[in-house]
Image (tube, rainbow, N blue to C red; front, side, top):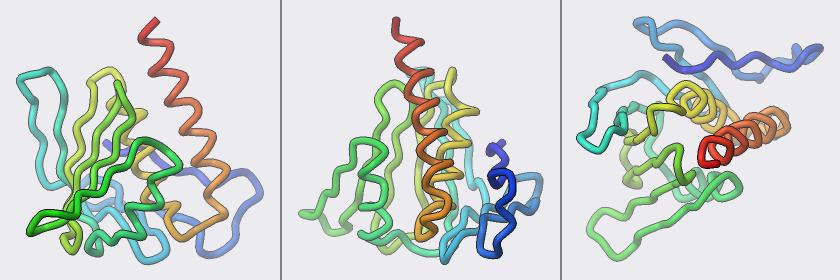
Length: 151
């Protein structure tokens, strides 16, 4: 289940992310983009967990570029359908085709909950600068968990 986003104390301004239940899967609304629902769940043979999500809008290059500050982002242009990948080594990997509203996410099982929380915040923070400090804090915590697990 996706982590719940809680606005920082004292921040009750309109436009902040709101969460509502959608078939027991939180629906994260943001400025123009939201995770509508989880489409599919698979346990991979390498031990990772793959989830597919439906977004409210197709992926754009601007949305993919927003991910750059939080992990390794690659855009593959030379194909019939250009796509992007986003990676936080040892934690999660995202793949999506531009102009399509689906993304695929592979999670390392130990970081499924924190990875889902980070993904929810990452999508919700796109186009909403006020969510940036909270997203950065969750990102730092996730990186600390991943690096601590490797030691």
